[in-house]
Image 1: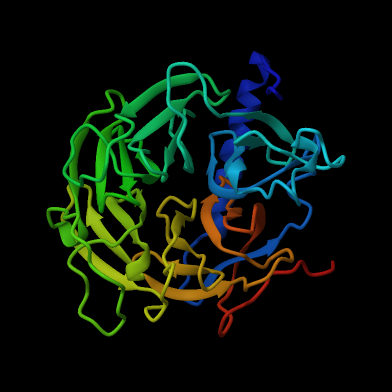
Image 2 (image 1 turned 30 degrees about the vertical axis):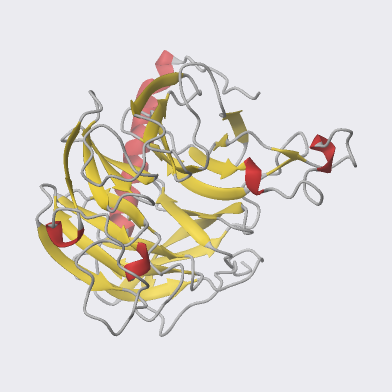
Length: 393
């Protein structure tokens, strides 16, 4: 197991803080909002660096960034094909390659693997199907699960030390439960209120809000702020009136700096926006004729003070949309289906770092993470941009 090397250099702390301040100031300057411009990116085909130990990734089902701009991902070992992908792990081995990587991997900003951990252990129940990884303001790692019986949330230190299990494993769906969840997709955080917003999820049809310190569920709501219902809604019909409840999965619930919460109602192809209390504010439909898996998979905000832009992962249509957050207008999009750098196969999760870079993960047979380097604000291109291949300089 890799471990991060502890670094204790007290004299350098002032320089580090100064560097972070300068970096943030530059980001604020480059994100000075103009109506005719949007954030621009290029894919970094060399990030991350190759994994050690003949390790390979299964479906990469979550990504989070900590206060040091270290990037955490979580993947599913069980999605690897035993015959064609992990022959070295067979008994007896069928070849020299390859072996499943541990579930949680941590990369430094340069793409070096600095730690890897996860899986079953004493004192907690590892999810049957882990789903999502989020880093809270104290750099604790929160993990959900969307498998059968995954009605709980796990909290670890960033080094993998187990801290807490919230909820009761083994429960069935109950969108009004106050002590368990229903196959959680993701957890997000509000530092100011010390609350965790749970997209709950694949079994339940709600947003649940936790006190981060006690783990208590303090409130929950369904679509439009309605009391959530577990009733089946039937298949999505783009020509039908808007559904009065969320469909499964409720795939993200992201609090913003101005007191709003943006919810991914994935198979209803909509973003719903709420006040922190659960009061409905507005909604926007994205690619509304998308069927099957839906278009609204995950959301990340730009890192300027106003969070002017919103990045939306669409794993069915294989692109990332760039939206103006106040209006929810789509400004542009990038990516397309495929397996080359800058293309996507089931782009699932998305996150940003302090420098404005965007990180995406891919589930199903995508099985990877990509970094898109932030280039500043550029004139908004007409139409979809496609893969953002680096320009020769």
